[in-house]
Every structure is written in structure tokens, then in C-alpha cells.
Image (cartoon, rainbow, N blue to C red; front, side, top):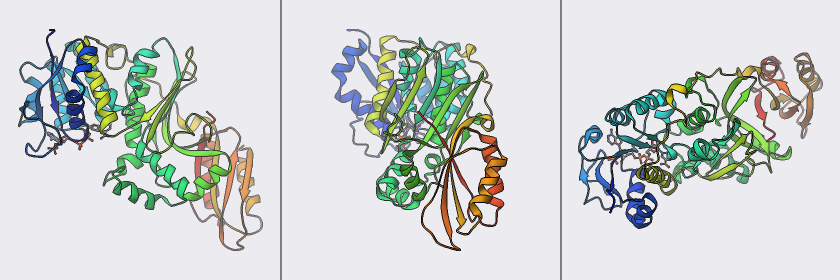
Length: 430
Ligand SMILES: NC(=O)c1ccc[n+]([C@@H]2O[C@H](COP(=O)([O-])OP(=O)(O)OC[C@H]3O[C@@H](n4cnc5c(N)ncnc54)[C@H](OP(=O)(O)O)[C@@H]3O)[C@@H](O)[C@H]2O)c1
């Protein structure tokens, strides 16, 4: 029999325990696919006595997690602790320095330090694998690095955070407001006690940054991303979007624009029947435009024990087979510093929601501001009458420069009839 592929696992929470479960349950088929058994040698987490629902009795327990990096007789480290700093980051660095392969689900670490880690891996002849870091169980990293490698990628659109997609879907289906649905998502375990990373778009932006690096051959650069979350979306926006034929999605967009690359994570309107419009609940999706493949769509569960651990184990099988690839698909030294596009210069159609006092002349004032900023109105809706009271006015525009829309919003907000900050969202006609 071939030598086993021997691993150490750091982190035995949702994902780590899932990896143990899969390796135990599917050992036979995994061995056939990998060409040799995958053997867990050592495991580590904070609390040795915690029941994790898996039998760990035949593995060495490592009290001091960083010691795994140099643990004898290990081919690869699985890092499923999380966090861009601290033990997880130290362990990944030390393991690569020791020429150990690393499999991780840690998107925060990759988005911030992916370039440096990819360089280190290349220098040491080790592999840095992270299928589980983006879109959980959806094999989008393999698809981009390998399956679509023949193409020049023009753009990527992604729904990359299941919590946000669940909240937006539930708001639409029930007509309830954001805070109410967020509380329910927390109670159901779909959202963290501190949900900021999810609902402010940070988690999804980490993933977009990784996808953009692979797709465009550039160094991952999280700080260059424009990020807006979903806290301000209300049920009025969702109802009007539906009336206009759209869904609201927290959408990651990475695309080539005039020799530059745009990276934006923000709530957008997408047509109801479009590839992104049909993705509901906790599902993730990535829509890719390649010059020859056209527009494949990848979708599935973006989080949870089974899907995420499934991707970790797929990376382990690749490594056990001897499959080797640079972290971002090309050698780290070939990754370029991207020239990032200025989101203010991008041209899109827009959805604009105003809350304005219902009185004569208001629409004329708003229209004059839009005209002066060169903005052409595609549609305008004001439902109901409430003289002297605030009412929503929804405007959709033809293609407009973002900077002009932003300037118009600033001017409209200063009108004395305007009682709320205007809400602006891009319409992506996918
Ligand atoms: N959960 C998902 O659906 C999902 C999806 C995609 C990616 N990910 C990523 O996968 C990684 C793990 O997520 P998770 O959901 O499995 O997290 P989790 O359930 O909170 O588990 C974290 C594990 O790390 C251990 N740990 C924490 N700090 C440690 C330290 N300083 N030293 C040693 N061990 C430490 C914990 O030990 P104790 O158990 O002893 O406390 C726990 O076993 C993260 O990078 C996350 O972003 C998760």
C-alpha cells in the first residue's frame, strides 16, 4: 500500500470537526481517489475536554497549537481556527516555512496576507490550498484556477455571504424589517452574535478579493475594495425593487474596466430571473464571464459544517494525489499590482429612493437636480398621497457616472423636503 498522507488539524469547531467526520466516514472512497489513505496524526484546539461529536481518541492531542507546524511526520496542516492574526496566522506562516502544505478555510488571512503567504509557499515548495475559504462547498477556487484556466476572465459577480442572502430573502418573503430578521437569523444560528463581519460586507469582500486575485492574476488587495453592507436596506426598498422587476442582493463585482480592475461589494438590484436574482436563502453563487467559456454559474451552500469541510477534504485529496498548484494559479512572483478602477468613474443604471414631503413642486426640484447632473430618468414612482407627510419616491435612471449620482444625492439631501438620506443602489443587468 502507498504511504499514507499524514495531516495535523488545528481547530476542531464547526469546520474542523466536520473534516474529521468526513475523513472517518468516507475513508475508503477517499483512499481510492487520493491513491493512498489520508491519516490524521495530530489535532489541536483550545479545550481538550470539549465534546466535539467525533472520536478523537486515536489522534495525538497537541496542547500548544503552534507546535503542529513542526510536528514530526506530518505532510500537511489543516488550519480551521480562523482570524487574520494570532494563532491561525502564526501557524500557517510557520508551517509554510517548514515546507509543509497548508489547507485553510481562512478567507480573512488570505485577503490580507495572501500575497506574502503565496510567496512563502512558492519559496519553500509547499502548497497553500483554500477551496473552503470562498463559497463553502462550491468548488469555485478549483474552477477558476483550473477549469477556466484557458480563459481571460472579464468579470466575476458573486453572492458570497449566506447570512446576508438569507436576511434579504426573508425580508422579501415576509415583508419584515432588517433588525427583526437579523434577530431571527441569530437565533437560528445563521448569523453570529456579533454579525458585523457578515452584514457590513467584510466577509464577502474577503472572498471577492481572493477571487479577483485568481481571475486577474493580481496581488490580493483587500484595502482597495469599496465595501457597503446591507444594514440600511429596508422593506420599502425590497418591495419597490420587486415592483420594478428586481431582487436586492449583496453583490460582489470584480471586472476589467478600461485596463483597470474594479472591485466592489455592495447591495445591488439584479433582474428577478437573472443568474443572481434566482439565488435565495443561504445559497452562494459565482457568475463568471470568460472570453471563450462564456458565462458559467456556480452555486451551492456557502457555509455550514458539511459543505465547508467537504472543500477542505477535496484539497487534501488533491495534495495526497500529488497535485501541486501555486496559491493564486500562477507563481506568486508573476502576480501584478493591479491598477484599481475608481468606482466614482463607473457607469451604471441606478435605483434611487427618496423620502420627501408630499407637496407641490418637490418632484420638479428633484428632477432639476438630476437634469443639472446630466442624469436621465428611466422611471419614477410615487405611490399614495399623504399631504404634508413623508412619502417614498423611487427613481430609476439610465446609464450614469457614479460620481454624478453621488453629487445629485448630496444636493437632494439638502432640499428641505427631503427627510432621509437618499438611498442609492446600482442596477446590474446581468
Ligand atoms: N463555519 C462555517 O460555515 C465556515 C465556512 C467557511 C469558512 N469558515 C472558516 O473556517 C474557519 C473555522 O471556522 P469555524 O466555523 O469552524 O470556527 P469555530 O466553530 O469557532 O471553531 C474554531 C476552532 O478553533 C479553535 N481555536 C480558536 N482559537 C484558538 C487558538 N488560539 N488556539 C487553538 N485553537 C483555537 C477552537 O477551539 P475550541 O473548540 O477548543 O474553543 C475551535 O475548535 C474560519 O476561518 C472560518 O472563517 C467557516
